[in-house]
Image (cartoon, rainbow, N blue to C red; front, side, top):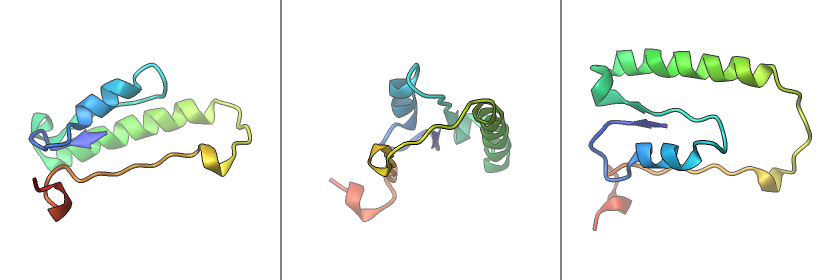
Length: 81
């Protein structure tokens, strides 16, 4: 998960909800000091997760078991009150 640090939808909260169930990480862009630094950290985390996944044996899964969700933190019209 990645958040700016001031959004209405708290990405860190979502990351904490997933801990212990799936590999998860959270990066707050404002805490990293710049978008470039945050991207470098995210890339490092993603590569570490990929190495862990590569070590696991694949198994079949039904497409109905896949979940994907996205939500803007507050910059689009759907989040206005």
